[in-house]
Image (cartoon, rainbow, N blue to C red; front, side, top):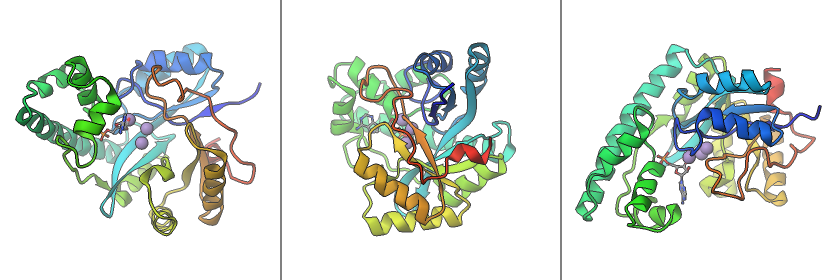
Length: 277
Ligand code: AMP
Ligand code: MN
Ligand code: MN
Ligand code: MN
């Protein structure tokens, strides 16, 4: 059977639209044979995802996408094949939970200053005890007809520097990588081109990530064109990082970003799954 890996996606445990069960079902329907569920700063969807994966015969890799800080920049580090019960990892998760709760309060206050009330109460209801993300606020703004789309919510309110933007200092890169390693996982730099760094700065980040114990980087993701993939493959070789592939699927409403719809990993790149298979 052809193997198809998708090692980056989100469920309702963070800012995804599908429950862990529906996410795993959709991946299986799309022919994915190994799926990593990688919710932002939480492992709470993994138990349900595993139960569904067992019943469908698809392989689930326990994952997470940690919000981390590198210099002045917020970056994302995917942890793959982690033990979700590891104490070091859960400590970081609980710190990130507090940071996100505090940030959500501030976002809500900023929205109130613009005449938009009860945002916090509303997103808390939807997210229950899960991680509150800006996507929750974006959905709230759409539901209250303050904006007509999620992207408008980011453009007008939630994006960097916009009226309801609250900057956060996330977990230091080194701490995030160490926690993933302590939990037996592989640390992978997520979507390296999304940080809009110059080539020099991106190489600096990759060097520091590697020094901190990072072992992989995403080379294939839903949105990259072939030229960008070549650039990433070369970086992976230069920094001796394994290559990962993942769609970063969040919701079925985003048609150009689907589970399992990924180019193959370039042959010269060492596949990240060889680190645990
Ligand atoms: P947070 O981690 O709470 O800051 O939320 C970031 C999440 O918001 C990302 O993981 C994306 O899923 C989503 N996001 C960020 N920018 C946009 C955008 N312009 N349009 C839609 N979703 C976005
Ligand atoms: Mn997200
Ligand atoms: Mn990300
Ligand atoms: Mn993601």
